[in-house]
Structure formats: structure tokens, C-alpha cells
View 1: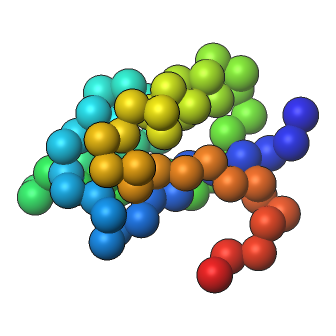
View 2: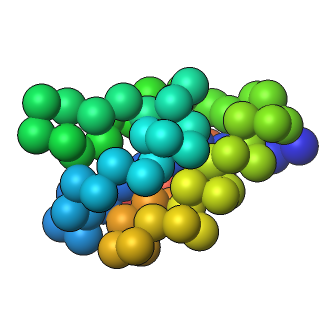
View 3: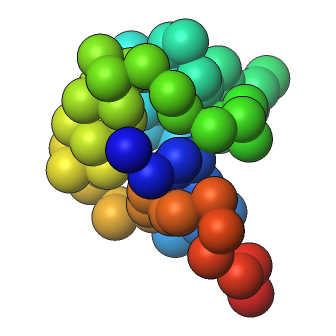
Amino acid sequence: MRLRRLRVNPILCDGAGYCAEIVPELIFLDDWGFPVIDPVPIEDATCLQHARKAVATCPRVALLLEDMDAPRH
């Protein structure tokens, strides 16, 4: 299994908070309701499934799953 992590695009995010409800083990909301994501690799299959659901559910398409070996821009 490839190691993946969640990332948020802060420009696109409007702080709806669905992501933190779907995958609370990786995301919590700051004082303004915007997600703070733990940058650790997602190793648990259930957690990865929840992360995929959060990405698919985000109304602003602000979340993405990226490979840990992918270069960051």
C-alpha cells in the first residue's frame, strides 16, 4: 500500500467542517472553523477510506490525498 496523506488548499476551503466530522482522527477545526490536518501518513485502511470520503464530500474540493513521496509545490 502506498503511503498517503491528506492536504487542504486553504484558498479553496470555506470552513464548512464536513471533513472533520468524517475523519476526526486526522482533522480538527481551528477557532474559525477551518481544518487543521495532521500531516502523518495514513496507514490504517479504515482511516484511508474515511479520508477518501472526506475528499469526495468537500463542497469546495479543497481536500486532496497525496502520495507521501510526491513532491510538494
